[in-house]
Image (cartoon, each protein chain N blue to C red):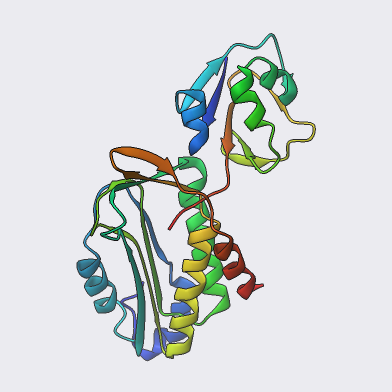
Length: 80
Length: 164
């Protein structure tokens, strides 16, 4: 089981702030996106959306997610 | 540590001085926070503060800032640490709200205390520019009963370029 966290408008697209997904084993990001509905997976593929794995920012390239991980999708910020 | 202001401790004070950085999940009282901050920094000749509040108008009924706990407060603390290395400060306060706010509520309070005013002005300006464009917050506002997400503004990123 992995936990996917969606911030900002991505939470609206996902219909929830977080989803749990069961993986067969360590999985690349591409496989995780394939497991999601297209209207959500499409926007998540945007390179402007940053990723945090277990609370640390990580690059998209070569990212592998395993059971117990939390992967957060962070759209451009708009604070203050 | 900040209370140690007698001359023999002066050279240690800057190294000991930690910024007061908080993510507020409930409303806070900016006037009370500023009073406490100035009282704790009597050795500073100047205190500059910036208060951001939810404006009343444009039909905005409420504003919500969401955050991501593993990144948001640590990012604010790193920003404060950077400000402390760039300017000579006696004290630095950063309080940023998350959650649902209504017009008049405080969103962000930054205050910098320094022996010389330019350091305090610059550090406050620097902190605000980075809070607006780099900190891990996502904003939406409620107008006419409907929530809509606020997109990042180009000007916020132009403001950041001032500090490179």
